[in-house]
Length: 485
Image 1: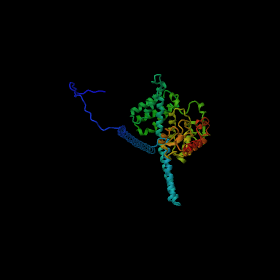
Image 2: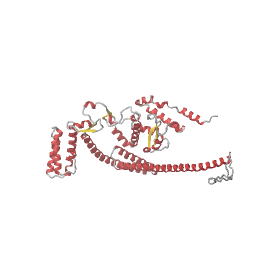
Image 3: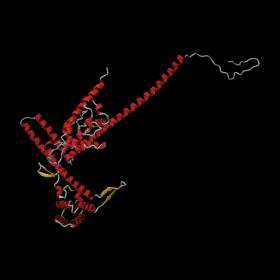
């Protein structure tokens, strides 16, 4: 290697030269140590950044969780308040048979509390006097409930009549190939609509005298189209009221006569000869041969009634008492409220229909069967939290991959049921003792419902029987917990 330098006769410019000064010598170990220290500093800041993001995410999840819990708590509180409000409204203004069952159930609870209080604080003649006073109060409350039932019956009768007339007057509907709904009036629906309008006009309470006379004249021309004893009686009553109206008789003195006209005209409407559209809506078929089928004898009221008037459970061997006698016996003795079991059955059937796997067992069971399953098998409380509020409980599948059945179900609260259905394998999620208890209840349910002939195909073809036995499950769980030596 060579270099150029100044000398006499050679000039080298130093304008572009760089002055280099020697520095401290850096060894390889010192260089790598410096690189390591820089990497540690970078990782410190990066980890701090990630930790801040994780903490921020956890705070956001906590905030959302607290908001969700607060929302759920408010929702449950609103639902409970709404349910209590509805129960209060049902007790103050009972209308349906479920409302009166709730009243009688509340009356029975009050009577038991009073009897217990009397037995604790009184004895001898004082106790008898207090019990007699309690009996008088109970009789007064039953009479009050009876008056409410009469008023509700009259109101429900009016609604049922309007519903019957509205169904008769509805046009025929069907869906075309394009998905459009087509409506068509027939001569029978037009006739039913005319009779409906006439019935409403003669039952109007705010009509003037001239309007009332026009309504009576229209009714008279309508019923005179057919000559029979019923129409003759209606015409006679119409002429009588028209004569009294012309004489200036007050309306309050004509209430009885107007009710007779309305009742006879309603009877006229229910005759298929005069109103053919009503034939398909009558409970009593016009063909006498149909009346000979599915007719059973009620040993309580001594009446022959159709099969629809009997409430049969899936385990029933005989027909037994009719619905009316069973309801009367419940009001007089047991006074139980079955509305909560009806709600649970509706929720169960709705949930099974949403699965879309052609589940059938839930639709075979009746309200009495579900009541037995909840009271005798599951003791009316959640299997996990022992919650005994039936309005908060739900009956769901134990193994969600198999059809619901009395031997493949579990009674939980709504929140617990939602979490249970998210499990991929219920056998591995719970403890051994809990699974043993569930299996025991399933065995009791299987022994009881195996008496039903309709359950036989499901018992023999139930794939849930192919699941591992509890002993095998215990053995497998125990083996997984023993360390290998």
